[in-house]
Image (tube, rainbow, N blue to C red; front, side, top):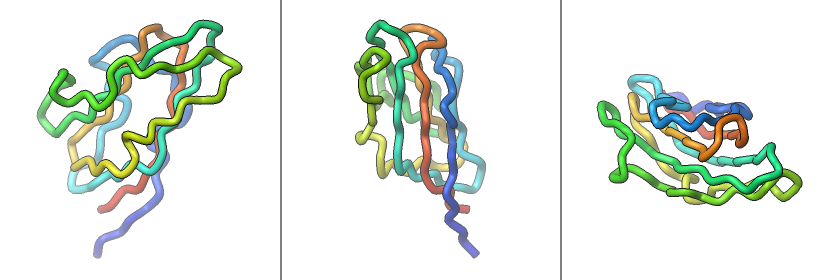
Length: 116
């Protein structure tokens, strides 16, 4: 029997500057469907974030970037929503990777549904 459950994939985690830091890996034999993504800058300087949706067995590259240098306003402004991710289906073993232009500056909240 297939189940579809709400999933908080990333809960306000501060992003890093390393492309190797995968923020969420979809469990095997599952599909993750993105329902919302919010980025919040905790510093007084505007920042950018690059987002990759990486197929299983692949690595982050220009081929799987869904947002490149997405602007995130300085602290005090409204958080940045990422509607371009909503509705994406990521197969088991696939990854969503977020890289900020400065470490410990931007937090990410990513939620969706996990179908198993």
